[in-house]
Image (cartoon, rainbow, N blue to C red):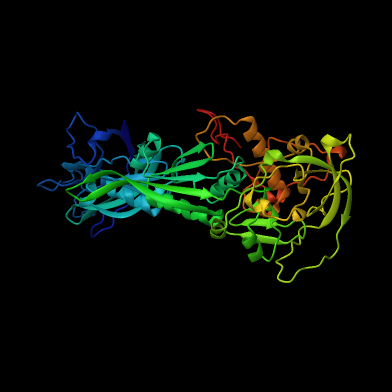
Length: 548
């Protein structure tokens, strides 16, 4: 593969004691093999193509055969072409190609530079490749000529000067084409190898639900923490992030500690050791464990921890998991936040799994006014309303069995609504903290969230999320259900939604009807981002006209 060098718009200015007019020369296009970089050839070389840049005189200065009267100068020539004709020893210049992968350019012998198109850094890199032929001339000006970004060509306009005869200066303006050749750098080779890594971050959460990982995935995409990963592998209870350097892995661990409550352990394994240079090659492993509590989990706090949180009830509902665990007491609307360090000192676990939620129907509801607050109580939630409800299982509609409880969903529920909750009175709980509680303090039913028609919500959902490029098998039925539940959680909770980039799905056109308004929360267009897709080339196909 060769390189093209164009000598175009060449202007010759001969200066002496008398000023000469400008003369325009023709355009010469020569194709040069890439192997002929930084070499000089004479004009008589027939095996190589060369491009004349500037000439210099031989032992005897040339004499113009047709000198004009009153137009004598030090060169004793009548025109710029005459000067070029009298130059005997010609010099030639070829330019090597700049290799790139994306916007990273190779600076020999082994340095890679990241340069933007038409930047100063890229111009300096191009001029360095012409350093050897430019040693005998003086560079006056240099600049880029605009080319299509996908053309793999860089045009650099150069203006050079050289004294070719006694007191005569020849100036030329020409364009040099640089051909961009694709070449893989060392980092790209490691990425394509898939098996090369220096550090791995193993993120684990011992829960059957993946709500926290779906939320964590969106945070990683928003903050672009996935750009330095060589590979992302999904396993049954977490994710593995592979990196080419330990620093990038440590940066991911620091990010996880700031976004989710977790703890980690670091270890390293010796791969090789050079006794001569005393250098070691290690592979590092960071094991990150996220707290095993997800959104909508029902937990029982240790008695000592409950007292330290303002005498909150031991039975609480997890409303969200961010950098801390957000809990609410459904009996008093008291809220509390537990960070990672506090959780690992007083660990607790979920009493039920999300698959154990049962559906209830609201038979009656009464809003509770101001209730007594005990001394030393914590903060009361202003986003919820306390209410007393009587509910009945939808699976027991043929019986008269009803359950009475207090709930924090008083602002959402009405008579006849469907709600999801946990049945504690008919369950056998095997938890050390529940077994130590007074039976009268354990509620019969704890309501978690209001139930909506999932098919209808999915039909009118006109937004989407981006996903990490992970190595995993196809989504199973349970994974699809969990992902739909995560999307519903984003619609229900605007606090979590602020940390996620939501994109408008142009492929879905929601159809509104009078029967679709069931009170389910939606995401407004103001909260959505436009997803950029470049699917049509502005130049069309090969030989096509420009698209207006």
